[in-house]
Length: 127
Length: 125
Image (cartoon, rainbow over all chains, first blue to last red; front, side, top):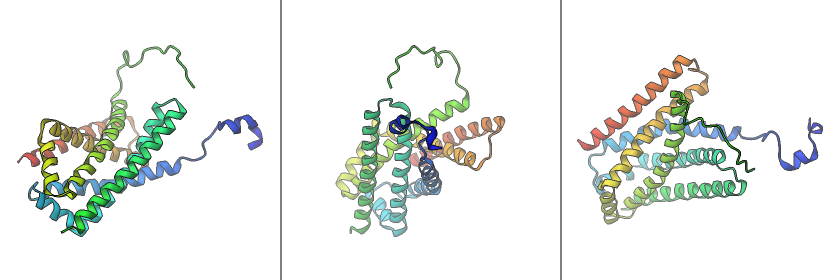
């Protein structure tokens, strides 16, 4: 089928992108994972005995909480990165600005996923 | 590709159907929750920082702008959550009949509002 495309079309990158299903699948898998995780998060916060520092720290220090929190943070920022990328692709016509914005968003999602995970570990392993 | 050609007005003329409205709201709440997630990480950092930084964060969240942020964040989260489930159900292939789509739209909005109200009642009481 490739001989039906002109060389210029190939160089310009016209036609089907041929990849994108992994993006969609990753979005759906993190969405599915986030359904119970978000429910757990909201329910756990609502069940906290108090909003004071000691209650929150005690809650995070529980091993189940710490692991679920890191899982939630990771799934959230992966899901967010995929979703934000689609929004940027839809609304930014300039190729350069679009690519730059997507790259910055990717870095921010990675950065904040790591910052969040580090904070959870610091609380969990702290005294 | 820069196309500055004239476009006939559409949003100023046609009323957007409920399903379209929910679709763009899903996108907007997604963006809001992304920003909210970033701020929630900062809340976590304030807990990791010790009782003083925690108290400072609590002060900010208790202020008027903190409460507005929390209200917006909780509603955006619940709406995106409920509509996201609606999307996952579509992905399995169910619920594409027009009447079902309209009903699921109303269920989504109701669930999101109810969840927000319940959360805030639990928080205040």
